[in-house]
Length: 545
Image (tube, rainbow, N blue to C red; front, side, top):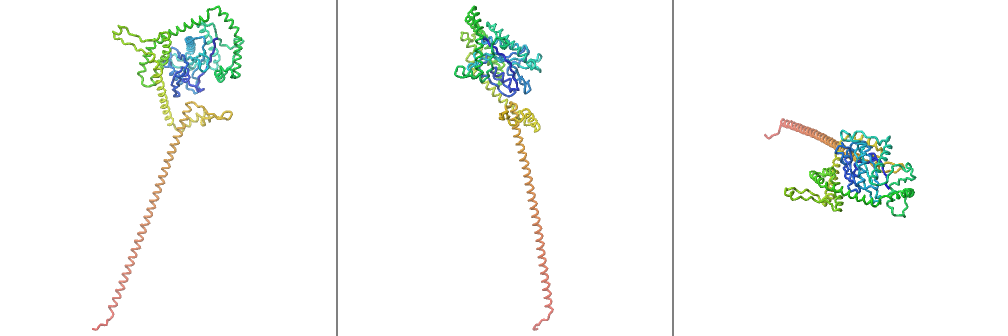
């Protein structure tokens, strides 16, 4: 029985999401997120059947490349809580094959482009049966921009369309659910299936069936893990849903019996299925032949283009532009399919006259070389581009840091005030208090984390500058003190020298005084001696004569 699933989701920066990361995951590709300087690498993701971009005819060519498209969206939307993209998540009826699913996706995406004049990025995902998913769960993620393409410039318009706004949102979603149900039924009919889907609830359909309740990820994971173990008791909601499914199955039983009676008068279902399978196989083989024949020229053009590029980033841009990686993977699949029916591609041999004319044999890439390129050359480019992106991010971050460190204290304080206004006191502590009094770590955006890191470096450098300045002041003070001490010593030495000089002068004067006194005394003695001698000469002497 065909299933119906259609949901509308929002990809918002307020919720911490990135349009580049979402697109990379859905397409299973490696995209460079310029806003956050990250490489979103999902090339190892399996199960991406198709990834394609749909756009209005006048769209600027650069927006037709996934990496450029979503980086432009991130750049255009400046608000920290900006709505970056919307997404339709749909499920395909299990009755449709790969080509029919692709055709149905094309119709739906073209409807979105025609209605809103936006760019659509869609991908079909196969079920992950190894994780317990239903093998019929083929579904698609359809991302589309919130801004229309300007008819004159081919770029995004300045205003957003408001069909999904609060006033019109419910009505818009209901209309799209109805349109998707109509589209599904049209494709089921084209594929030859006499079944339909209904987007309305069971209550609205009045079919006496009961809707199941959403089980949630935990209950669903438990159910998948123990789906073959009857001894495990599933949660109450799972048991309730199982009972509802059994009840609904019994109610449908009568309808199914009536349908089986009608089928008995038709062509055997097995013959129809076999004929349809043969038709599908023939169609797939024909499509594979077309793609394989066109591959050699496209791959040669790609080889010529990439040979002129020097950096891995330039080479990666060529891979994205030419979709060479996807072409190579598809060629391997097509080759194996064609080989199974003995129609694999072979090099074209030149005839006698062509050789005589000197015509060169066209370059032919054999399957082994293509496989080696997928596992070798492409992977090397992806890894090299990733390293270059990381290096560029480091350089850009260093530039931002250098610019930040040139700010004065007033500018830095304004930044801190703004962050505290957005994150309150938790910004400083990076924790917040829950209603139960428990501390939990605050998850900050990459931009805020970078500012937090820059602030720490700024504060450390500012502290170091202040310490160095203080050391200079201390050195100057110490030098002044040393000079003062030297001056005091010099003054003291001068005073001591002056005192010594004065003492020498005084001693010299004293010595001179002693000499003069001695001389005077000697003169007095001489004078006295003279007087005595004179007296002796004047007295009579007794002589014999």
